[in-house]
Length: 78
View (spheres, helix red, strand yellow):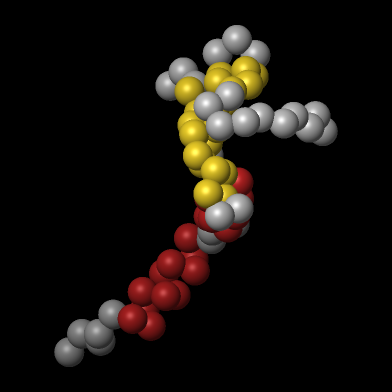
C-alpha cells in the first residue's frame, strides 16, 4: 500500500484520468473529491461490498423457493 500525505486542496492522480482531492478536514473527518470519467465506477467500500453480497445471494436463487414463498403469503382461493 502506498501512503501519501496531502494537505487541504492538494490532490493525487491515479493513472491519468482519476484525481482525488482533499476538500475539507474537520473534526477528524476528511472530505475527498473524486474526478473520474463516467466509465470508471467509484463506490464507497461498504456500499460496494453490500451490493456484491446481494448479487451473490441473488445468484443462489432457486425458482422453487419463490413458488413456495408465494403459497405461504398469498390468500387461499375459495
